[in-house]
Image (tube, rainbow, N blue to C red; front, side):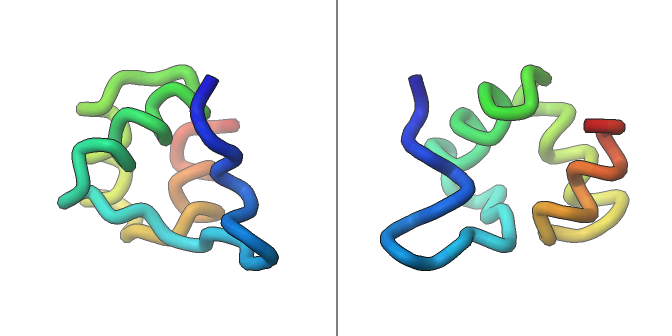
Length: 58
């Protein structure tokens, strides 16, 4: 199970860094999509988690 992506310490992670392979992996697991789909979503709507979530229909 990936680490809790919604909260890191007391902060909520608000953006996805596609330049970090572990983040692509963890977000792909979290959203149940491929790493490529995460990268595609970030290219389409930017790195903000809520925008990516909407783009993916999650």
